[in-house]
Length: 336
Image (tube, rainbow, N blue to C red):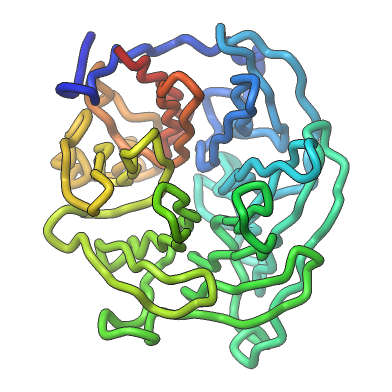
């Protein structure tokens, strides 16, 4: 099935990936990221188990490793000195079937983490939680990492979005030293409300930091020193949740059931798989059983999204979309 228009036309491909068989596969609440290596390998996370998985272009599992994360909510691939690494944003908690998909009531204060690892799972660097008053009692729940990569002319600074905690974005040196924080009040748009994803955009001569301010239905844009540049998208987005670029185009995953494509000037090109009305359904992104407990939805449709969350793009322009729901759905949009 084809979706999209013009240069943004894709073949919708479901069931392309060959997950290892497990009892937990269909019961885990998928809530993870996606990254693509230079060779085209697809890196993602198991819907239920603490396992990072690497698939080839045909969907065959090449390797996997057990992770010390609650969830790999955001996965960002970087390259340092000709070696690829992953930055993992672990938000510190995951809904479990054993708790009827609620968070355990005895968790207390949640402390997530942002870690840099090799592609086989060895930890290289873990960033310290910012020493800020609000973290003495408040949760720290990172959702995404973006890097001003030296291979692109940057200084290596690392940015961490605390989307589920204090709705702030923190900046570190490449060695992990804390520099400062932005929270949206630097410009007229106002405070972030769940800065869910962040992305360093290098399409133009001067790189910029894009912040998917999901709860406010917009993107705020900064320079690489943290100065506010602009805000846009209230007339375009519902819930921007993930960002990649494909050539001159920017691709944005919206949790409320669509993919949005923008041009170089932040203007709307098209929507893919738009199905945003589905988010009005009881229990979305899942359904509720007779006892009011979430269960896997029966409302999934080919060519229509339910809840896009993780997003990746390969060198051929193919998109990989991991959706947020029980059992997950991992769709490839093959560029035509």
